[in-house]
Length: 638
Image (cartoon, rainbow, N blue to C red; front, top):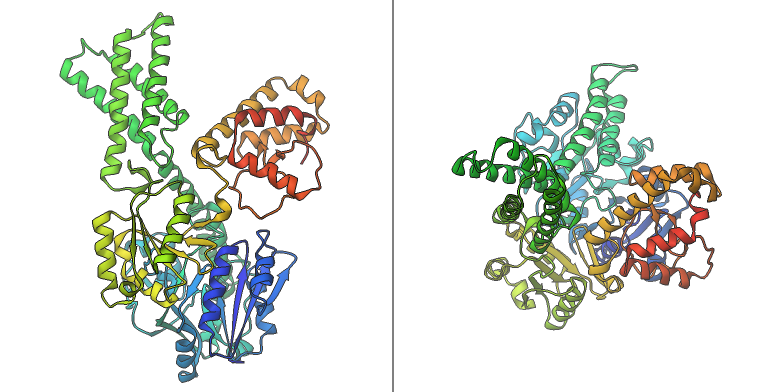
């Protein structure tokens, strides 16, 4: 056996299916086998592999044993000369395995090899080639010098930024997303260290390969797409803790002596600093538009005061209006003014709500109340400034804040006429309508001028998404085109050969999603906001009437605990009923204390599935209220 492909999967069924298609295409003519090690997925991944890829050597773990241990299970079962550890959210070209095997056969000292990786937007992933995270290199990364000087030989060594991305070279550290390994080398230096649950195990193994007298190589002639982090978002606080803890384990193992020293303190301290930074950045991203709204309102009022004088707007009224600006932000959030995509109609609604509140305040207040005319003038200023804030972000081409409806995306499909038509029809349904729909034929897509032709169409028609039809185009050609078009700023997606779904970065669109209507869906911006308001309102009422309400609940301690969890946003009073069929991909919501059938015990999966689907596609706050009333005695259950 020449090559074993090992894929560890956890709840990324569609990406895994696409990955396996590309892997078996690339294995054509090569003596090899494919292992899939599933770490207790609950999305139907195991069933999909058994049904569609019966030639796969499947290991279905009853528990999530982690990345290292799962890979080791397959490595021990393989009798191949080489193994490749491959993430399920990858796409490989038809010639990648042949190119890599030829290179490894010609370089017997090469114990490990990494390839050139691009992300779902066509951009080069710097982790394709990495240096050893020595104490100094780790310190530069932790304090941000690596990001500030990515191409420096000193500060950019973590990603070897000084090296050319298109030249083969010896490197120190390989990426676990695609890691070719010589079995002889593993027999000598050992397998993955299972003390690393996720992240860091590739660094540790790469370092031990070099300590064992072998070489690690970066080989850019072989390229893959890596969608990167579909199961763990790298902006999350959880990722920060997991990643830096892995660095701490590596440093403790290789660079520090037993006991506490400066390096250990530095790395452990960076975990909490980086986590705090992630929290702050997440807050700033979410608060950008509200803060801009407040600043522009106050700025416009100060400008008007400077023009008209203090007789028109006094300092006391200016302070009061500053408070009103904050109230206006609350009205904006209540009316959906901060939903993505941005809708001006929601801004107008919030201004009308603010006008009503100010009118009531002007009538009932006896101190420092502005006249009704001045109050309405403030509402006009608020409306102009809020629309102005969105116009500024729109003019800066920050896509989430575009004033053009993102639901009407402009799409270019590339493939045969039949496949293009089918892909556009599916996108039209999952997007609830499209804007411009353009096509490019197969002959143009495989021509040497393809990148230029596509780039011209993107500019001319303002294309948002480019969809490649995998039935008509080679996987390697799709990778080439994505890399060549990376500067266009469009979203790339791949329509699968079986026509079941279309995959893009952090998006999977399929016929299974079509029952979920966006306008009334539980996970729409309005649905999430309304559901959260209902949860807080119900919790507040229950806590205010606690001596009475708790008397009607079976588990009183659990009731108080659940109320606290709902108030903090960890749970919702109502979630999906457990035990339903998984044929339909339902939008994600918080776990519920009650299910969509209240506290009823239903064993019929079809009944449960229908109840969950109805709840997801046609959400209403009255449904939550009625379910809470019906299942009141069970509000204390775990």
